[in-house]
Length: 126
Image 1 (cartoon, one colour):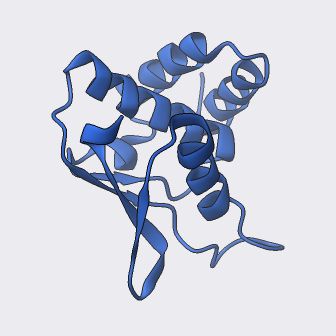
Image 2: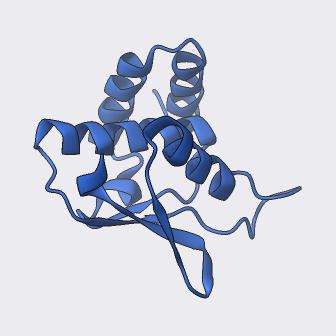
């Protein structure tokens, strides 16, 4: 039976092979089985705690495509990555998600004062 580890591994493999649509479909299947729920519980907040880099990028691709398709309304979206408290070496996810949104989608990020594990994007700018 698939679990969050197996779903994450396959999403990572698909994303590494630039098979982004298939990675998104698999992630949505996993969501239907109760995984990655935290990331999708709010229309104004995406919580990426406990996600791998590939899963976080895939979630952001899903969210941004929902905006482009009109499924998700434009507005401010708070992205929570955490600041790396539980990282073994140095935090990766906060920088990776920021870079991904800036470099691939050319989005402007607004840092949340006093919270280095959180930032805001304006969804109308996608």
